Length: 292
Length: 318
Image 1 (cartoon, each protein chain N blue to C red):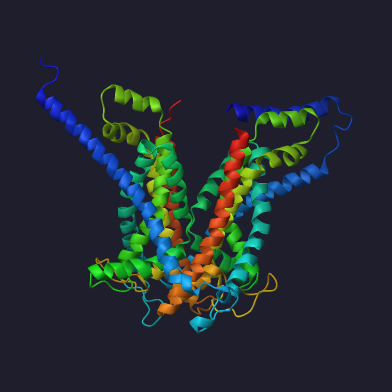
Image 2 (image 1 turned 45 degrees about the vertical axis):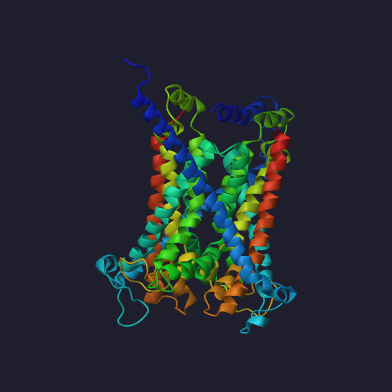
């Protein structure tokens, strides 16, 4: 029996060729998603760039494209995000602290865990319906910033809790031992040692969750954020509009000019998101280096 | 496991010490207790949310079913709840959702799997460091932006090729939703594949396997539970996707085999009703909850299935 028959040689060459083709195919598919992102960004900036000026940022929406702007939408989004942060960060981090530090690992904490994982998968529009029925109608908060912020907070709470728990888990047990051995109580240890040590990780998760809230449209449409708001909200009980709502409104109109306005709005929205995401990645990289 | 045990010891140790030696052993720390109750309350908010969703959807859906028989809702093939003569067959909406999800899955599953294989098996650390954040950025783009992309770029481009494509059509919606869920499949599957130990790959290479054979016969089967879970999560995301399909696929509930025509998904219907002036308590308002219940039930079932697959079929290498 010949060790290297010609058929075996041919067969081996074929297998290697197959392998190379497969690798090239996988690489091509991956890089095409990168190209896709570039195409998307290019398309949007070509469409929207000429509308992007101070007048666009500083004007209220209008029937006339050349006079229309995103002032009320931008201010609404800023209000919304501040309120969402005020509500969701304390509640989300507290929940994570309870589950990681205080809860006895048993059936109830397991149940809460499964429940949070499932909530993270509920479509955002279902949260919108919940907000409409509970906050807008039942608590009679009307179509206010507060209704929107509460709905959005419920939506991103699972994300914040999951990210915060991961961050808290990375704090070494020895730090807790050290605090306990000096006579600190459970809460003193958590507040003075565990929380500061896990702070960067928590912040990363919180920023990513908030950037999700900025881009969410469906729940706001459900609770009835208005699309035409020619005034600035002055308090949490005022009605409002937000960037994604304004973009949706412009995209759904047939005229070309409004599509271009939508593109300009998208540039502003993506810039805000990019800033937030890079902050999160920056914090992550910095702390990773420190821990190493 | 060891960490958990250690934590338990720590929680018990000070209490025992208190009981034995401290003079203030019987004193309750009210501040500490109050904080504990607050933290537990925050953790329970998630449970309240779930209960609220279920109670709300169930009660309004039951009211809906007193007016419309379940048989008509689940088996009817006409959906015209907002005008006379009204009909409440949900099948057209289900079909619309199914069509878009199927199209999105056909794009995202093979492409996402290929990307995951490239990232975990072939890409150098440097390339990975560039491509993975880009995929995460793609995943972070708001869905309304994908809607814009579908309407102003995908549909006009496709209309150059297929002249009988309607302005609103299921095809563009499926394409952009596919693009949207691709990063999810890629990053989750990549994580699962990277969890497969290198020794398994080395074993296969030692037996003379090529990289293609190692990938398809060792790595993918070994990480199959994670890969399947990523498919299911992406599909559930596609079913719940709202703004892109509302903008791209239109508002025409119909059961059509053609992806060139306008359809309406469950989510798009919910948006349509909430944009109009639907009075509270009417039958049109209740259809909102009936459709939302169906949507919630379908996505929940898929999410639970993916968790079951992860727990039951996970290969653990240690």
